[in-house]
Length: 81
Image 1 (cartoon, one colour):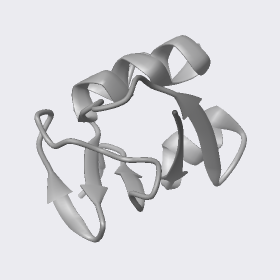
Image 2 (cartoon, one colour):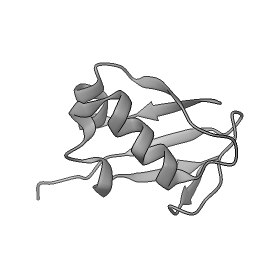
Image 3 (cartoon, helix red, strand yellow):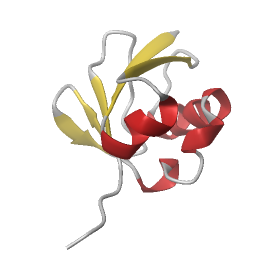
Image 4 (cartoon, helix red, strand yellow):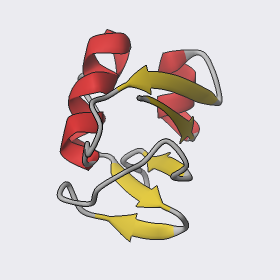
C-alpha cells in the first residue's frame, strides 16, 4: 500500500520535499515504514533511526500499525541549544 509521510526540518531538506510516498505491505508498522524510507530515500538513512513519528496526531512507537489512511508525520532529531 502507498503511505504518505509528512516531513519536517532536515528530513524535508534531505528528501527535497515536504511529503513523500512510500510503498509498504498491508499491516505495516512504523518500523516497516522506517525501512521503506531508507530504501526510497537513501539520504534519510543517517537520521531515520532517530526520527519520531506521529500517526493521526499521536506519537507512535515502532510497533504502531499504519494504514493507507493514516496521517503520518516525521519529526527529525533536533540539535542546538
